[in-house]
Figure 1 (cartoon, rainbow, N blue to C red):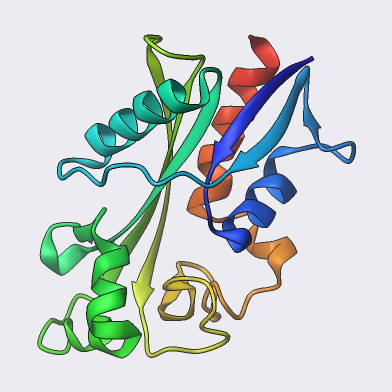
Figure 2 (figure 1 turned 180 degrees about the vertical axis):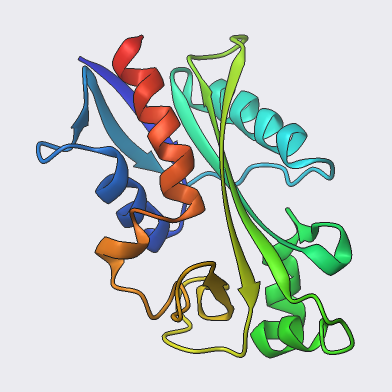
Length: 189
């Protein structure tokens, strides 16, 4: 049995990843998923560059297989910004500030993008798995305890991620789409 360390300090993210990725016994094929919170350097760049850097750095620290995740929220009107910097925008201006950024734009469309980086260990190649869900930015509705979920309404739904039942969100989200690719990879390797 091989162990993969999912690097996150976010308890909500950990619960969601385990709920989507693992079977009832908490495993993905021959792999057991564990968790560790690490302070990794926050580099600037594309989501791919950021994910590769995080995975390589985490693999060095852990000394074995790691899974890292980077989540973006990109506004169509801003050519996919704030993108990988969404965490800092939420911290700086809050959810209402994000919504207000689009007040002069007709296009309220957005993309939720999740990229997982898997690295077998120090010095190994990083494999990337990405999922994208299209939606729109709306006034905050629902619980506000999980990032920007309360302002993102996925296309085809009249509820925000925050309002959706977790069992529904976990079958349509950007994280689900990326983890579906991770699961396929792990089950065949």
